[in-house]
Image 1 (cartoon, helix red, strand yellow):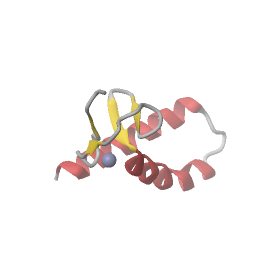
Image 2 (cartoon, helix red, strand yellow; image 1 turned 90 degrees about the vertical axis):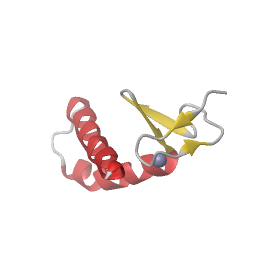
Image 3 (cartoon, helix red, strand yellow; image 1 turned 120 degrees about the vertical axis):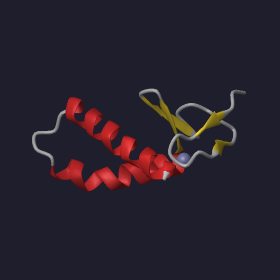
Image 4 (cartoon, helix red, strand yellow; image 1 turned 180 degrees about the vertical axis):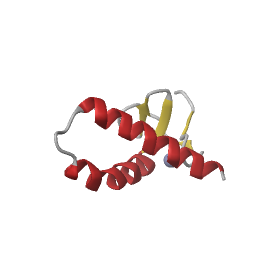
Length: 74
Ligand SMILES: [Zn+2]
């Protein structure tokens, strides 16, 4: 089993299993609690977004993730 560290909280992901206990966003690996945090943060913005596009969504997730990673570093 590969050892995966979450890029946001820097914790080791136990029983790492892609798509179940951690998720890839671009080159970043994110654990499930951090993914939930990220998604609940962006949810309200996504709901208000009209028209919705996946291109916009992916960029928005990228930006939010970059901010979360930055926050984790400080
Ligand atoms: Zn995490």
